[in-house]
Image 1: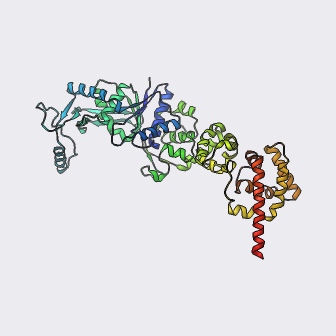
Image 2: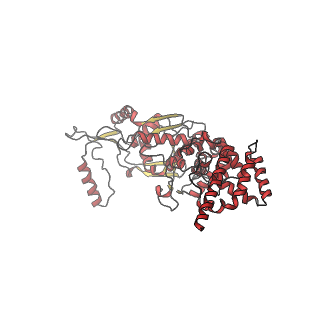
Image 3: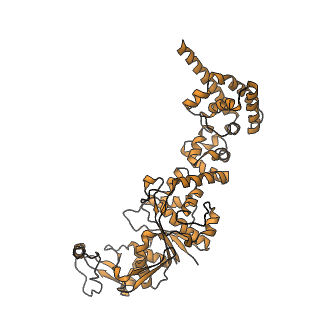
Length: 475
């Protein structure tokens, strides 16, 4: 049975690279019908925070990456780590090292002076004497002195490490707290993890972890190390490249479906296919399709995918995400049209949910002022008479739907001898405050009769006031 895990350190938000690792691990488990585990590696007590844990959980939930086991917290497993440490020491596979910091610093300086790679020289590896007074020892793993470790990487192929290049790793600090590489090994062993999918920045840890697993007589998982993600400029990904975290993607108005599709294509491909539903990802994903080289983000690709999902997902599904953005604008969505209907009308002309929410704001709240250029061009003395006739025609409608509204606007255009746009555009500015909106009939249907008529009255008052001001100026 396949069993994967995602094991972030809670020292910040769930960043894009971590989210991709979580997605790949989740997809691999789902494709093979096995469980997916969430493990919080919070042994860095100085940097780990409850807020960061919540940010990770929130990001996973927003993406829809549900876990079958966990979340497990390493800080709640210290007794278990201590038990395994003691076992390794008893077996002679780990030992107490009494070197002081000053001794280790001097050793490194000597090695650098001889142009050697600085590393621990194993001086307490076979120490049989009494504990050194005044020195709290660390525990080191007794790494094999010769031979090699072969990492059979599912993405990169076989990678060989010489044991002679690996020094004896500290697995417990002087205060007794276990170190990262040791905790990971015990957790993967206890949780029965069969496949470890993680960033290639962990590759150098892998031979050390394999040696500890073998010393414990535990099965060695299969590993797949995913290349890092770069910015569009080929540099290490950072905030200057745009959204660096999952929740920033949400805040900017991207749909989780678009972000998942975007992430799966950062370093994985299936032919020339660009758009994948979640079911297709589960069906098709395999580590064989992962690239060995680093992937660069492409912000325009994320926008393109987001536009696709805005237009093609069930409007009710999009509306659930739009609701959050509407709320962020201080709008009560119950004071206007159903959000699913707003999605149908505005999705075609929106890049993001945030764009859509801002564009649709006039449906729920009165705007403070008209866009100056739109008003100057459309709310003129020439537009006053057609607007009055439109108000009268619209007030007489008993069926407030797009089709009758369209007919009413068309009839006024014919009656006044004006092009349809010359009638519809002043009406659009009157009701929305700007020169851009969905088709005018759909816009008015969403806005509702009462708000439409009130805003036409406001526009007519604006025209009269502007005309009076112009006459006073000319006098």
